Image (cartoon, rainbow, N blue to C red):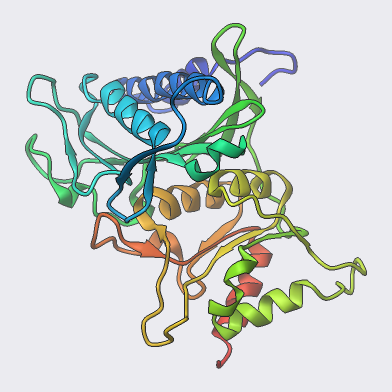
Length: 338
């Protein structure tokens, strides 16, 4: 873009569409609907301290986690914003146990939307950044029926992915497989404006992000790797710095811009039955697509996230993501004999 040019996200999406002469506009319409939902969620997040929209509903989601009122608002808003446009065949959300069919009164489309409506919502009451994560696939089955099979995919099949972080400013970052671009919401005009064009993550960072409160449940490779990061680097003479917010979107966003590594390894309290926490479809896949497009890497410690075939809607995976050299170094530690 020319220096000084003001580019809205709508204009950027249209310009991306022009790169594909056979494009019908359906995908563009889908992204426009998502940006509208993001603006509305941003408005409510910013009001969360002064209206009755924070706190618990008294219910639990499919993962057994206490549900925040704003989680429910964001989930319902995305569903209502996306179901009528005629772009989608089916949706799935971290908050819903099963797939979300498009109501029969609305036309069906050729895309599939998977999303985490409000990642990090346990931090809302403390005014910590939270976010929405989304992943888009093309429908692969024939017909217009809503099928779980269309949602259970490898991450490498994604046609787009992104996230919206609601912090000191609201920012949307997305990729369609042609680089990663960031847009900051200007509330005075109600538009997302291009602020970070063609984001590239540094090949090696100086930041690591992990919940050290779980250290007693880590595998030996992870323990050795974290100990290694705390040692003085031969090149700089200083160790890595720990930066952990506890909101995946916020931690990932910082490391994407500055470089570093985010780690959420499996819980090895019972070595025979390691347990992962982060969701493949709603968190790991979309962020892995983004980081790879920015020159980074995402792994379970032994395999590429985007190559994993999903078998369950709420399948969970370890997630090691960030600067390529840092993730490769972790894999070496993880692969050593325990």
